[in-house]
Image (tube, rainbow, N blue to C red; front, side):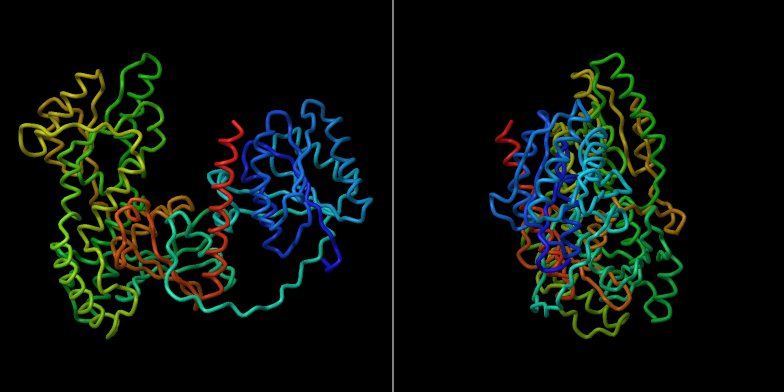
Length: 538
């Protein structure tokens, strides 16, 4: 693309904004500078087109007059072709080069746009091919790069020459939501030209996972099983190493993190089948509710968001006793205990780091003031509860004491509201005791071994797993070739809302960090703009 080329981007508007602006974002990332964007909408998508105006301006750095909208008739393909073709020809007659994108909208619109581009002799036709529909509501940079392809037809665009620039030195960590880690991973792998990464605990030297990102999914190349940890510790003569307070072995920490991250295959099928049967019966007969009671083990394991989220919108409610929530909160509300626990934890980490990786100083991997293990897990549980907040029913404290008394309060509540009660617990003996009292109780066995065949990592659960690993190990490092990014969960003055929003700190080489953060900031600004505009136009 020469400097004198002036490009017009023409596309139709559907009901998914990301499908409209993500193909343009992909072109911009390739170096294309558009001078004007023209959005074609139907009567049904007018408000979406109006909302997209400001979002497109933010993305492409355009002024207000450089984003235009026009109405076309979707019911008549021939008429739509005629209208779109005339727009393409009009721009070309004034010396512009035209790109027509056919990604958004329903099939009649896509067909019409393709035909109009061909008949109007547009210089380029594009289509953003998404290989996994789970990401269709995500902006372009937040999609794993292996799942998206910008397909080009009639390509007469020469890639813009990007002048090498010296990135400014970026000090410190970015604070981002865990769902926003993909821009960093994408840029990391683009910088190395590799699709393989290793996830490790940098201050201890544990290589937890090796992953290969492919078009059809994430392939697990290596996982640190029990034998790996035993041999690693044995060769360094530190068998029996434990961390934190209460003491936990590195293997058990890794296993718990995999469970909470949704990556270890627990046998939850009997529980899911039982809940689904009740939900489907409710849908047929109504209006009976289905209530799920969890012990604290299942909240820490993030059972609902990992395995039951699809059932939440179908009538499933989660019961939460005030006593259970108080028990979780007690782990992070006592500030003096948090300080003393962190002091002990930091001491054990420093000793382990010296023994395992010969580190004399932890640098900025582990802060001098942070959040201790039990409090980190409690905050992780609060994140789980926050993400299912709309489906939780709070149950007042009971007169009795202990877990059985809490379950009896759940049972009484369910009977009062006419709900079917199902209990999930990580304690087999407790499940048996509940069944003896007439409860429908399921034991979720978490004793499964960590080995490759028991691990399932997807593009969807990987950010959650990264959050979980960083929470359990404080900091992790993701490496491709010889380039790394560091992710940590705790730092001085981290606020409770940041925990319940899943905020992490990420640090990367300057060029990667700057590019990723710019993409995230722009995506968030576009999202805020669209949300505001669509609400205004309703």
